[in-house]
Length: 222
Image (cartoon, rainbow, N blue to C red; front, side, top):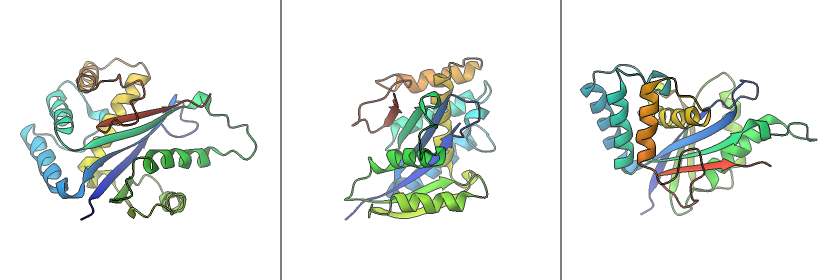
């Protein structure tokens, strides 16, 4: 019997002129059979810590640190997996003939998804809806991955509908924060240290290709 996995995709500082040094695109994956367990446990943690609202990197603070620390420990204790492609924007040469930043963005999504898909399994891909042109993005992603028969479904959802998509935002935010060399918020520094305590490789570096738990691909365009 074929296994089914859900990918919950998000992106951070990915716009060409947002003044940020890195483009990040990432997902958290879960076996479909484990979804109910994950959702129930994340809801339990929210109740335990009396937290309201979404899981967000921007919400990490001293008062909420125990909650976010529990979320990270839960991620590393389960079958959940994280993958991200990371590009230093200063290396992107947008002067090349025929080059568009938008095309490059979709190539990075292809890199994110294609190389970790097992053709023996099936996949549901969920993306965070952010703007009014999201339907065009969905059509383009479907087109560039149309030959991958393992992908059963592409769908946009709002982040507030999925605690696992919110968890993608949290881990991606931590990596981006560390890459930018920021350190002003003590609780965020502690959470990054907690993440790195679970990892064999610093989160500012690429992991081995066969790393399945927290897989990072820093793409060097030089």
